[in-house]
Length: 246
Image (cartoon, rainbow, N blue to C red; front, side, top):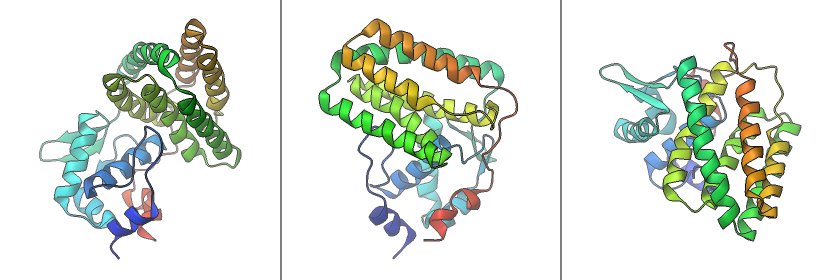
């Protein structure tokens, strides 16, 4: 069985608005790279060598190029003519611009989520936050960070607005890269507590409270940033070693 077949049989689609590791070959490659970015396992500036990725995933360079093109469209990968692709990195000014954009988009999303969220969607997002907390409790910081990002994607799904969801996908992944660059590795993550508060505001139908909590949440995230980010890697085989060994 090829690596691609193993990926499709071992990794079922996610039940939320994040990536799904099923579908076409480039869907699978895209999903794994996207998740590696959300989990901060891929460092900003990492060169994404097509040949190495093709060997890791057991697919052609054409498939890799399609996946990288999708990631570039979301502004989390940069395609450099004649020099290949790299994971995007942000300057301090660019990071501030991205957080400003997050505030604008998140305000619209949380307002719409309060109006449109269903009981079933609320149950799903509660389960995500419980899993997020469990990941941090057992020391699986990467999975916890990914779930933290997917919480915001699920809110965008609850808002029932496709353009907002598309904007959010790019902004969440760019934010994860910024955190990988600039957040101190020693600072604790308590996003799940703030996520619980946001869910309660949605359940209460309190739009003003939900917006206020969201702005506080983003302030908290941005307030932990500095110039000494650490923890991600630029070694492609190390990042995807769990796939190679299967």
